[in-house]
Length: 281
Length: 281
Image 1 (cartoon, rainbow over the protein chains, first blue to last red):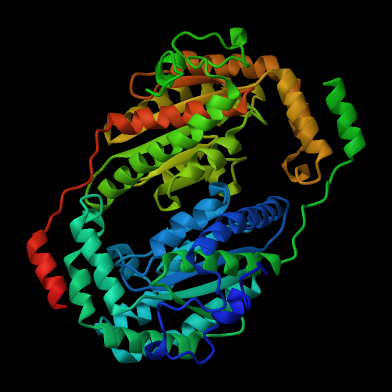
Image 2 (image 1 turned 90 degrees about the vertical axis):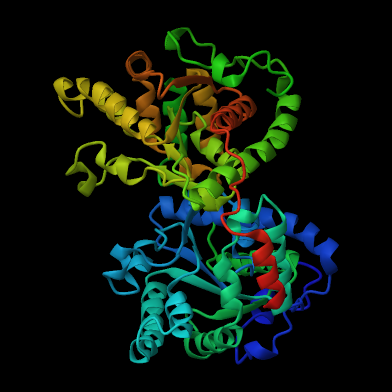
């Protein structure tokens, strides 16, 4: 654990009965170092993450069957993209499987909701990153009644079974729900309307969705209550402070990778012999 | 063009009749700034690349149909992975489509050689990166007679037609052939045998392949002679100096992206109206 953490991020952020409505989105659970130190630490810990990720990749290349999957959920402007850019951006792109899930395509709609998700699961040795995920199918879908309740109701169990299956197959699942306050979201949306380099990120429906804030909170609460499992635990991430969110996710990934206890794969060849062959070549 | 370049990388590295056998792999065409300056420039230019890539991504998100595809070819240890990590690693992972092509799988073998390549082409707005590519099918395949000559002979034309098609569809293709000397390769392979954190990168066949060096040079020469086109030009990159190779590819990508002349997409909504809606939300 890095200094300035009073407890590790994976413990400080564990969902474990958390009430979404009570969350202080400007808090920095487990960390009392402040912004400047937080940013310094991020740079330092990114290097640790990068080495651990390379070990995972190395194992995948030599027959290892482990992988890590980061699932990011959050309302518009919660900072999912920033996590991808600033946290995932610090590791080798060769070892990253990134997927973002928007409104389902016509083809995707012709399959079960987990079909497109399965297609994007990380291969052995990869760090998979889902920007939104199958949880959309019990969030936006539930809030807007896009399918009958009887259908989305059964998805919680289906999701748990699905996640258990992939966890059993060797994927460490790290689920992160990012929350900003309604005010912080307003500030971030305003920025997208005031800066020409951000217009492209804005969609008028982002404002429309704000009216459904309580319904989304309820839907997120159900997600936490019904899909927070031992094999795929949820972390609740207060995200008003971008520097904290990025540092915390870095720590969550470091913890997940460290737990695999991977070292560099041993040589599966006779080193002296190969050195001799190389000299003669 | 950044200072220290006597001519731009895309001009200095153009294949244009280059003889592979005559290449000085330790040279730094177009750049006379030396290693320290080169490394400083890389950090600086990475930021320029990152903004240009984000503009491409923004266009893709708002209906734009352009993409960029970097094709990296080179012998083992030429530094393709380093380019991915240190050049592609400087842009937002959300906008990167990375694929590496190894020995074809059983499924891939049941299709035309371009099938697996097509599957991995970058979507609109994406920066695609191929670590090895369809050129393996006229390199290793030719050197080791993996298919009859009549079959690989026709692939040059097929490749040109394929690349013309995707270029016409809006993909800017940047092809880079990386070359190290036989001695430099020996040094790099030795490192993989001497450092436990690099064993996993070593394969005994890497040494076996060294005996085919002249055949590979000939095969690369044929690639340059027969697939260097206006719509998909080859760049010949001397790669003994990793810092130079990384800087040069950064410049090639900057040039390719700059040529698209993309600015931030304009708002496709009434800004004042949305600000009013936001205030009321």
